[in-house]
Amino acid sequence: MTHVGTLDGVGGDNKQLRLSILGPDLKQLAKISDEVKSKIAAMPGVVDLDSNLKPSKPSIWVEPYREIAADLGIGVAQIGNTLRPLLAGDPVVGWRAPDDETYDVTVRLAPSERTNIADLSRLMLASTQTNNDGTPLMVPLRQVASITPASGANQINRRDLNREVELSANVVGRSAGQVSAEVKAVLESMNWQPGYRFQIGGATKNMQESFGYALSALVLAIIFIYMILASQFASFLQPIAIMSALPLTLIGVFLSLMLFRSTLNLFSIIGFVMLMGLVTKNAILLVDFANQARKEGMERGEALLEAAHVRLRPILMTTLAMVFGMVPLALGLAEGSEQRAPMGQAVIGGIITSSILTLVVVPVIYTWLDDFAIWIRARFSSAENVSEAATSARDQLPTKNDSVV
Image 1 (cartoon, rainbow, N blue to C red):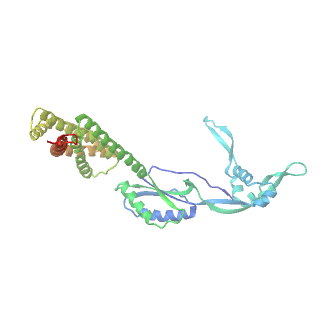
Image 2 (cartoon, rainbow, N blue to C red):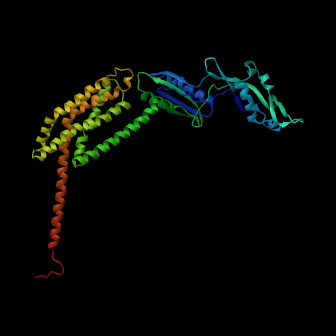
Image 3 (cartoon, rainbow, N blue to C red):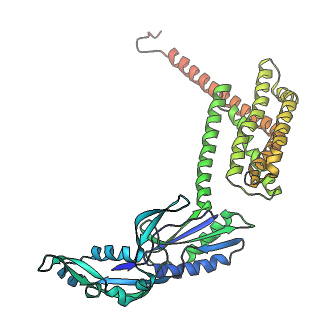
């Protein structure tokens, strides 16, 4: 069956929320999309809700009589190839206009002859069979096909070998992630027939993928920082004390985002990755100074107090420089800068709280880990002494070859 007057294509937009409803039947997809659209429209914060499913337009269905057409030497492809240039048109030549622009000249039937089924039924098709004089046998269209008026889809979109109806919307007053999670919960609660499903795309899907990549980068950064610090300090425990300042940044990050009424997004995660280097630098200053002081004979507690006193000024200078440098970005005063503002907000909040708490938490963690290292060394030392004593006692026992007096 040949459908004349439809168009296959895929549409798209840059809206924050995009939802694809997939299935084999377009009419059923239209019913499902209407139900989903009514539920999404009732959600707070959803605006500009639209669908790419447009109203049907008048069309003509041409259904070949396959057996009769085959007997007369007419194929289905031949019927389609004959109707396409007559109804849809075929560019035959280019016309150069006075404005030096070239326009395609399309030839097709007049509008009055394209809408009358009686006129279309009288169209003649050239058969593969020939007359007695050798000319092709001409067969009228009505003899090899039925022609009926119908209404067809204005546009047919396809995705993953299925027909698709796409709903798109923007979000105002709420985060796109919250709305997307609510939409997903509503869709999962619906009763979906076999063969029909949904996919959530748009900015939400891109954001989730970006979050995954950012978290992977964050984990790798933590691993590499630990490896570098372990090689630098020749210890497996002291890097833990230094990196204990990293969780402290989350306190300031979340407080800052709440204060600015912002959200946790890709840019704020980038800001957190930036903080990792700054925060560990402050902790390195403390631990390195304390280690040097202890090598010179200073007691551990006194060395930590001296390190906090001496390194306070460079830590505060670095913190204030970073805070004032990030203020223009955090305020988002420039046009379009509100998208990048969470990065500056996260850096400001994280660097302030981590700089303050680093002076308290890092020395405490350093002390605990140092005590743990001393305890481990004592256990191993006692175990070695016991092993040496057992070996010495075993060597002093008489053997069979020894004479007994």
